[in-house]
Image 1 (cartoon, helix red, strand yellow):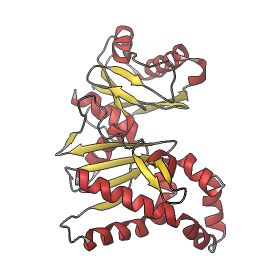
Image 2 (cartoon, helix red, strand yellow; image 1 turned 120 degrees about the vertical axis):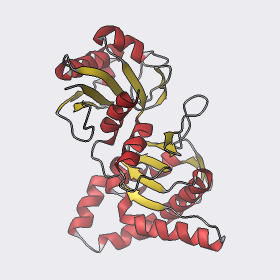
Image 3 (cartoon, one colour; image 1 turned 45 degrees about the vertical axis):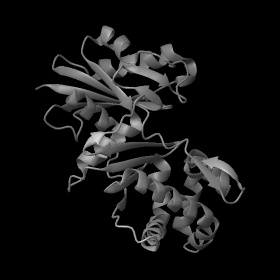
Length: 292
């Protein structure tokens, strides 16, 4: 049976999966290895080819890549890759296709995250904003059922959005306010420690809520603005912080957003959800390969 390979390339690990062309939700086989980004582009490519070699067989028809950073998917070029130095303006798909001899496609990881989550939704929403809150902040936008790309294929990159920090009274960004590292610095502890304290001490959440009040307000303002730019049916949060930290405050954030909408008497509906897929980037890569 024909199959497709999806690969999610991150700063620390490469996760690859082989999927039957008739079922892209459950991998037939997976392979994981370190990215080893600090050892340079050659080492990353070697690891990437090793992953492909472990999964590719004579029935493999295409490969999809999910890549963090600024990528020009239609042209197959990585423009800027902060977590993977050495790949600036690198034509990744042409390079790989010459080696593996089957079509290779790639796209930004947050766009593919949004695509996979949108396809998985049972009520088939046509407009979805997928936000990855992890090491950084990234997003993908699905409008009218299609991935929003923009003239340079950078549409939906909300991590660099300027936001006024009400505590420091200075200009900041969504990356510096809502990402995992930003929250670790703000709270003075890792998010893993926060989770442990929350589980072992029910009273801890009260102090945490109080400490997080400015960030919760900023998050609600940020999402409110995005809702009126994009008008999504659903906002879906993924990434480590998005799936394991921000859910603690989701009801409060949603209430604040709805109050802002009500105060302005605006006819807008939306829902705020946590990602349902464990490896959305991987599945999104397989969906990309299938769609091309």
